[in-house]
Length: 455
Image (cartoon, rainbow, N blue to C red; front, side, top):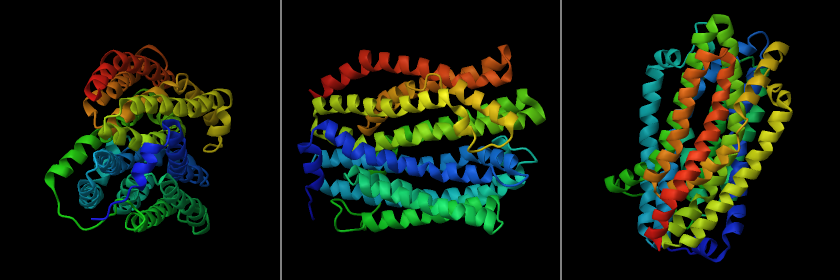
């Protein structure tokens, strides 16, 4: 067996703050490019003559299901990469290689099942997500084409986590950037020049995902990788552990999607037919902005996840504590900057998607309502993702799920008291309450137990 100490030297000899910058910044930019997949689609689709608003709302309706598909990639990728880093910290190189091989088998098996199931059940799924008869032709076209690229999507996103886990943050960033650039170039060509409309947006995304998957596979098979993808037999115990660790990311994503679905249902119920479509369009714009928040922040925590995992394997509490602080600071600077910008100039962002003046003002107001306590997201990401990287799902889950419970309560209760447009305050209320609860629980329960375990 070939051993490489590149990852060990990187993670053991460098100060934690330097590792956070070296691994977190490229991964953050990688996820910034990743969010361009949906952002660029929505920007161009929103400008389709005559049908832009309806087509944009249709993509917003599809988003929860498509994000749920990607959640499987993160479940296997983050779970497998975290488990592999823990194994490397324990100097178990053979197990690390077996984890990578089993993760690949899981990704391909899940892709086949999801593609078949969603192509067969696309109509009931779309209507369950809040699709109307007006939206359905656009939503069906976008959804079915996108689902055909599931294997490439899961392979590219899932295996990219193993590049990050081995310290190759720049390669991981380039993989995502490659897909984003291809998508940006193909979107206007297929949507407008070729006259494909929504179908062109979906096709551009699928092609870009194929490019990303090809690059990631080329890298993960290369000799420069300390842990390379190779042939291995399926091992149930390894796969079960991968899913157990990654289930935290998966469940969070599913809950976030459920929240979007519930929000669309509430907007449809209280907004009626005409106003409901307008409010769902505003919700799609709000979710687009939250993608700008979530994706790069998730990039930071994904890139730095190997710091938590590796040092947990080495039982180094001091470096884990420094990693928590550093990740929070980096996420806080990024998210705090976005909060200031969107509160001061929301029209700059909403203008990327909408032309209609009334709808533009309504969406700008909605974004402001949603993001008053955005800095609380930095607390959630630092604590929840750090604990998840160490396999501490039992600690991480309550910290995350409490915020979501608060959000769901708000979206059902606010419309009963106020006008339906004030339901967008649910985001700010849940961020503030959720972050306060997470900090209290972490310092009173989680931190003492973690310190005792490692020391």
